Image (cartoon, rainbow, N blue to C red; front, side, top):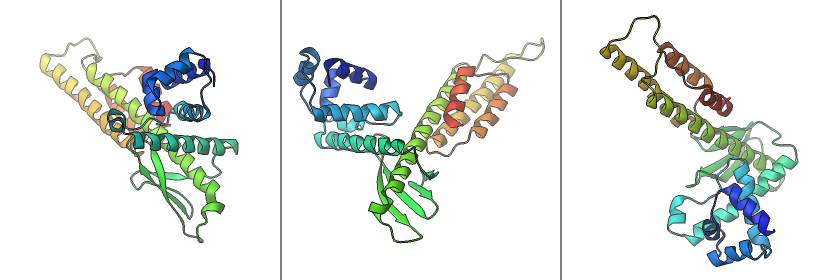
Length: 257
């Protein structure tokens, strides 16, 4: 990897050279040397950067949790790095064979992905990622070697569902924040002006919908929200004379549908 490629990766990952040095387990002086002296980046560092880039481009978490970073927990940081490399390789293998063969159903409350008699369990990581934990099937004895493509497909589907859940929650929270911050900017039918008590009642009604959208965002983060529920709240806002901007609504639709 050249100096220019290293700069490109750091820019894509939105990390500074000192941050990258910590995550890579090298000194700040070493990464400065790679950036300033046109020295080729070693293979292991290149592999980590490319794996992180793979996950970043798919909107998947790759950084260790904030506690591990803040305390400079070398063991946990190294574990996250290895996990990111292995997971990025898994995603590329699934994509190389055309994507998941079967539509796995992901249940975040049970931490399982199922398809027919097959079930893959996972546990959530502190950095908002996940790691596979168990594999079982009801039709015959499981064979990890034979069934590895199915297990990898399940992991891919869990990742896709996780990305959708985070994107949906973020988009809904953005709408809720906008509604709450602009609750006084509502439309009124006819020429009649509202008195102060009615204005206050209307604002509180609009803000209560913002609270419900926040609740929906919390459910979305666990994969338990439907776009139809958002549409119902949107109709209630429209009935109250409040209209969130189209880019915000489109972001929710893009994330959830």
